[in-house]
Image (tube, rainbow, N blue to C red; front, side):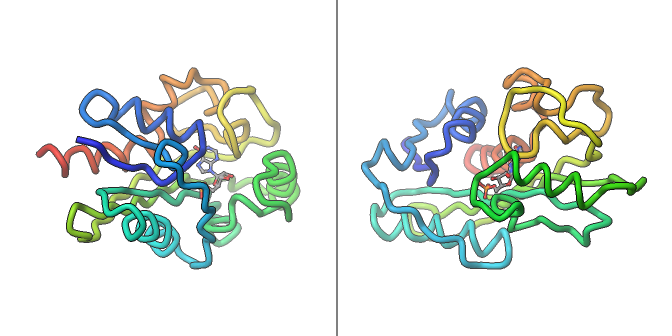
Length: 191
Ligand code: IMP
């Protein structure tokens, strides 16, 4: 079965294909010739994931899913949350985002945080289903590691001694918030 993942983010695609790839042909937006960037105008993960998946479903009339993810930090009242990609003022500038996060947490001893993914799936007839994935951890005071993307160098997942950016993609893909949500989707599609 073919299923569209409404993204062109190579890291996400690789993560998702490592979970779904054996059973589904996962097509990215560029695979289907869609180069529209759907604006994430909602202030919830659910809302943004729905906007992207719905747009693609309406255009291509095929089962598709989209994810919206972000980092929630306890002492920042769950910021940056849905604004994770542009926290530092420039969309997708990971260095600026991490620097702002480090500044915001300067002197803070409570560094608890979590990555959250909400995945929105529209089936053949456009029915909407949501799946969630959460990974708890802490924000370090220094960047460590060079793999991955986003806040990976600052995030130490609970129960591990390597940041997401120090792990191999395979190791991160086993425990990541996105992998958890995609596994939920897989269980739903193939109970
Ligand atoms: P998106 O909306 O799912 O693309 O994620 C928004 C932002 O959250 C990204 O630009 C990253 O800053 C952050 N983020 C989401 N997932 C991850 C992850 O696995 N590692 C690091 N940062 C992430």
